[in-house]
Image 1: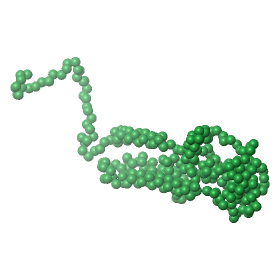
Image 2: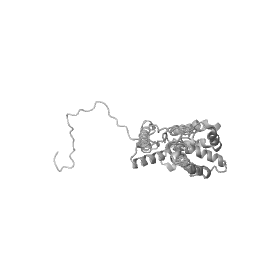
Image 3: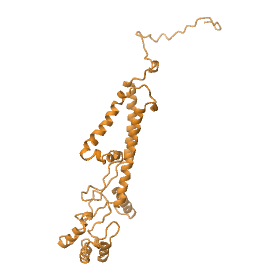
Image 4: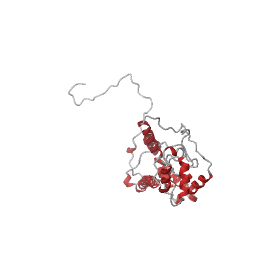
Amino acid sequence: MAHGNKNEKVVYVGDSRVRKPSGVVSVPPDYTSFPGRSEAFIPNFLLKEWMVGCVVLVGFLVLTIAHPAPLGYPADPTNSAFIPIPDWYFLFLYQLLKYPWVSGDYVAWGVVGIPGVAFGSLMLAPFLDTGKERRFYRRPIASALMLLSLVACFYLTKVSWDFYQHELEVTGTVPEHLTREEEAREAAMSGKEPPSATKPVEEVALVDADNADIKAIMEKAGCLQCHGTDLKGQAGAKIPSLRGVGDLLTKEELADIVTNGKGSMPAFGEQLSSEEINTLADWLAKQKAAGE
């Protein structure tokens, strides 16, 4: 080719070492080349949805690991002050099952029906919403259902959590995991071993445990409902054990507490006679650790 001659035909010579393909190579056109048509749902769009789903799932797992369920005390069927609550990501379902139209005789609808409708709608969404529009504000039905689901989850979660906090405030209950953390902190500050759920607490025997008069007085006052049938109390509700209480309080102090109440303990001055209070206080004052 001569330089400067614009009319001369230019011929590009390829590398002779590269073989020309024998067949016809067809490159599929992009879906935008077809006016009025959108991307194929399977496998193109479905693959993208799976990738987004995996990212969301990983983020959700990170949240559950960062905010795990708190560790409470071992299960105690006598602990009437315990307020059950599920993990935070199940609060919306927990609250949903409290409503009368999805509980009791209709619990099957709440457990199977509503979740089935929700997941069924999600699975059928690609086949029901076949419009070509992809902007959310031009897809009112799909966008409204998505917004309704998000609002319902947030609303039910907040209502459930607020009600749980209200129950704690009314009953004066401190969550078990907070009590455990406080006990561990106090033990660390005093240089003692923190309490362990697997290590049994030192047993303190009851003195005159078969006293029939004391049992009758306690049943009359309802002492066993809070302090337990074994009188070991409820650590989660900060109800003290009556075993060894004589090491902490005198007979006069015990009689005053039974009569006038203290903290979350009600007064029994009008429910019990002076003689019964004196008998109970005298028995409690004898409850001391062995050898004292």
